[in-house]
Amino acid sequence: MRFLRHLILIFNYKTIIVLTYSLLATYFCVKYGIKADYPHTLIGIAVVFPIVFSINEAYKRRELVLKHYGELKSQGRGIYYASRDWTEKNDEHYQEKLKALLRELLQGSKDFFNDDKSKQEIEEEHIYHVFTKLSLFIKDFRTRGMSGSEVSRANQFLIKMLSSFENMKHVYQYRTPRTLRAYSKVFVFVIPLIYAPSHADLFVGNYAWLSYIMPALLSIVLVSLDNIQEHLENPFDQVGEDDVKINPEKFIEYLETNEEAFFSHFSKDR
Image (cartoon, rainbow, N blue to C red; front, side, top):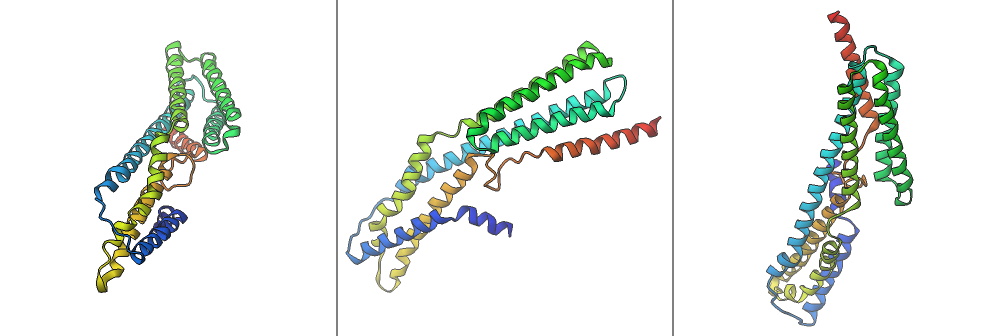
């Protein structure tokens, strides 16, 4: 089922449209004797290379987002461990407050990257408000017996979280070159039509049906590459199979699981 879902993402209505008019154009060129012999290297230079370049750049952007998302979670986990292990006394209510802030931050990030753009300004302000609350939470470490150097280190965790969020935001807001993507899309739809006379030139005797294989393959390959690039373009839209999934609940669940294991081990040592 997962393999079929992948195929549906690659082969969609655009594939059917381009395939249909490509075959029809070839049929009419055969019927009316419109034939030409175009060099097929033009397809690679004018269409395939720009699309593959865009796919590569979109994939790099996705990998960059994953890197910064991992850093965002790891620094948040660092603040949590600092509040749990570096203070003089353990306070469950205090830990729950920090968990709620971290959950709110990840949920706000998820909403910011996934929701309609009209709501993003409000959601961005909310995220910075959560960062402010985290900063005040770290400031309170002093009253719980943490040394100044340790508080400074915890504050560095927060700064790195801010940096990670800003990097993710900029990857989201600034895409691969729009003009290059527009150029590629135009040629994806135009090339199968332009090459119809060249495909009609392959029309020979009893194996004439073979002349329709080339336009069919050309249409499927070009549209499929364009679809792959389109799904990779926004790593947050949750449409493609390779999107980045922000999961606040799982992050908090892992914190609680590790917390239980820590205190179980700690009580045994004592």
